[in-house]
Image (cartoon, rainbow, N blue to C red; front, side, top):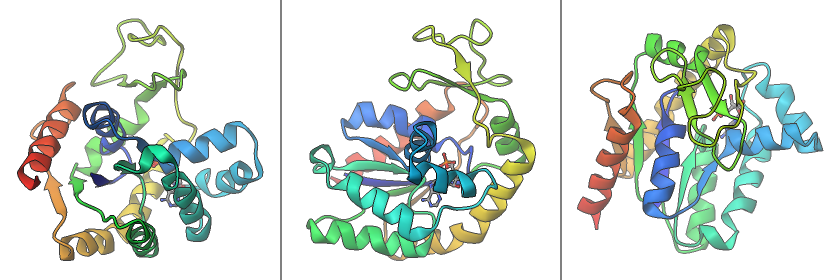
Length: 223
Ligand code: AMP
């Protein structure tokens, strides 16, 4: 299964992808996470990516496409992947099709998470995540707080926030998303793989679990 998660920043793509990766046993590939790792390691790629990310802008297509192409060539990606945050432009969507086509594969499903902007902003400015990369649990200080302030419930590591999770940057990221998303939604709709999801209660603690249930159900219907 090659799944492309669509939805704005803070729509819950990351949380849903983390659950899906375990249930479907295929890797979760997040371009945002990959860039953040490079930024942390201070690589050339990281420095370049940071110059765009810190301004709420997209990293150029040619750079992002190459990063994903390399990752998709790994052995663990041969039976499927969950792409989170990629593609974000039509150019990237076309490049992805071409990469997959070369391996005799295609995008099977594009779930699109639809969440109102006010909720996205509340989610993002209150978002904290586990500093332990192996764990990566995500919390919301308002809607889904950890039991102990600043500490991950699951592994006990320190919780951190993303430097681009502030109100101005999220507004810039949302406007970039809306500028680019229509073309992607139309692209996957035309291919017959778009699956819009409007969570009934997006602020509920189990919202991601419900989203994943719908995606798994859809996958079963397709088989
Ligand atoms: P995310 O964690 O998906 O919200 O990504 C954080 C930031 O990384 C974005 O705001 C972009 O600046 C950059 N980024 C992530 N994925 C892409 C992509 N597919 N194309 C361009 N830039 C990206």
